[in-house]
Length: 552
Image (cartoon, rainbow, N blue to C red; front, side, top):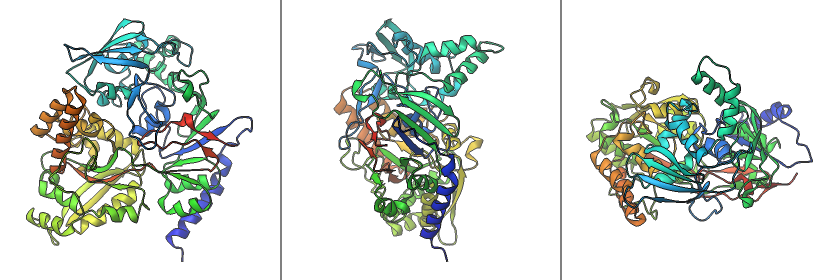
């Protein structure tokens, strides 16, 4: 009889044999790093990636830069915002809706055209100005929802731009890490050659062509691209930050959404690096000399509740019961082989935005059952809830087995959990459409992991009523006046310490409201060949591939 372990081992062996012929042979003349991603497809390459932060990690931060960036140089310190294509910035002393950004001189795009203020204005308008020739609606959803207050950009001189927000917003420099600078000159080249019935059709054709032959300012340049199969990037030897010129000649990105398939490819030598290896394969990987990296990330693996009329989650007793019914330590030590941190909120004690929640999220099944009984449920009257999730995806960890674990755990607290499993990018798209949209398919919770690196991403886009779909990611249409007041207070506070205090108050209020089912923080597990060196696993969703070397 096959055990689970033997079944996995057999699957890995079969996958290794059947896929070996499909993988490229590496020329000895160049160093090549091959990575198995969790994505089912290559994230979009045209400047604003899809597929969540896995897209930013692999096709955003590699080929492109933003005005601001993240410090990914340390495994011990929190990743903070640092200058990118802007060297400095300042909000106006009188009008807090206006910011001046000084640009980095001497930077060129991969096609040789200069980076300047005109390029910044062009890239802002590609997602904000609907009558701009380069406006691309397909890039708006993954961009505007991450910087919803940005209104316009104006050139002051060649190396200075003024950005204007709809309201005072101290979060803007952090939000701008998501606006990647694509080459206007390269796009114009494709536009001039494009065929189409009108300017809009020509623009769409230009963006399609650009995606196949992209040009940013980043440390990596596109070499070849086959959708759903592979993206090859080569080092940008003339990158403006000489400390981050890649040490590897080529990086090959391969979509591999199934954990066992990724693990098989690593064990068979077909890739050098995999994201999120199969947890039950960790002992074998260690025994065979593969390197494992993990670090607590600013990340939450949750269920986000619907709060529309008729949702079972509108009862706070039900929301609290769900949070008390999950044995997170059991999930960590069992299914995930230690590769998680139990979540008691978006931020854990010690974080400046933690605050002092009165509701303690812990495992207390008896208390959970009591709350459910008070809400009218019990062994003979279960509460049916439906959660939409994916089989894989950026930061999703091991979504199917984790949701099945929750399904079984919540059954003991009188929940009848139904799972609606869909493709990751579809789930991510549905996230912006909201619980009222037909795409929710009747689900009253969604399981999309979220980054907690900055105030907007961690709290505002979920808790502020004005961020309800389709504006941003308030999927469940939360509408709590206290949350709105605290968001306004934090956003309009430009003193860092006072802003942190307001954010801590907002976070504590969200925990006390049991706004989510908080389950885990990811640790970003990666496994790789011992030939790979120079890896720094930061406390971030992102990682700097430029620092990595590989022995051939």
